[in-house]
Image 1 (cartoon, rainbow, N blue to C red):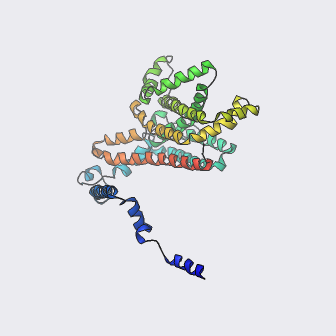
Image 2 (spheres, rainbow, N blue to C red):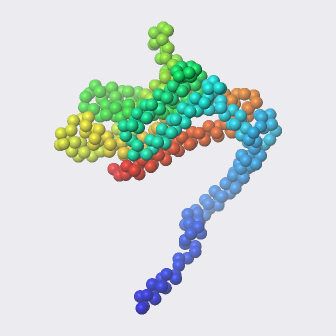
Image 3 (cartoon, one colour):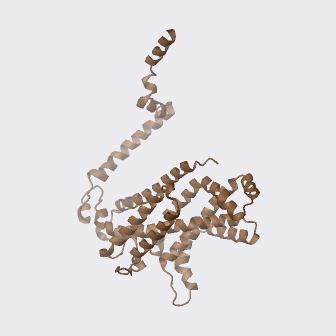
Length: 364
């Protein structure tokens, strides 16, 4: 009976209000000690000074559907630059009446990416789906078959070009980086030396230098009359640059694998190819998921550097809009829109990498 009374008494006694709920969280995280309290008050004051004017500029005093001349008469943001020039920002100089083709190509790419997020779909049919999808994308962009008018690659631009450079670049750079990492750890002196020279040489120069070389220097070595498309040259430069950094990331993962794993593969009678494919690389690649994704995100953002060789990616098309006298002075609104596009793409990659890491239960 006494135990029952004590149990009922314990149920009736509740923790203090200041220790639980919202009040408890605020007290623990924002006002725990005089130093945290001062920092909280300073932060609140800074936010009070910045946020209300920002909201007023972005939403209250802004214009969303108007001309550039009307925007110059207000103090708020001129978001009209986005809807008025959206098609040029997204598709560049691609023929206006054919812009449904890059739109369908992007939709197809996004559908493939979302379908590939589920690891249960990582089977042979998915590889065939990607081959078919990429072929259809190329057909839609280039044309020339099935009644589609041909569009020269010099007219490609905007978001499709950014996605093209990034997706193909990242897809090709990762396996090349793995091969370079294996080559650097190879016991064959020639392969090891060549891998080290390549990795250190590429990592020792900025991507801008490689892009300039691909655009200006490389054509000088081609025979007369032979010309390689600017997009292909930029794509190769991005692949070579990214692969060198991926190689060092993967090499770190290989070094983290205990020696016993290599010895276990040898004891099973596996050759070098099978031991790497079945035992070592799966573990190493799980370890380096976070740094690998960091490099891939950096490579995705670096595709914006192609503006220096006159490729009209989404950043270059935005800059072209800002050179129009009607829209001069509204660069903040345009660049915020472009930054949002890059943020969404990078957030998707980062979020997926965390999900993949949890599914693979990386614990080494």
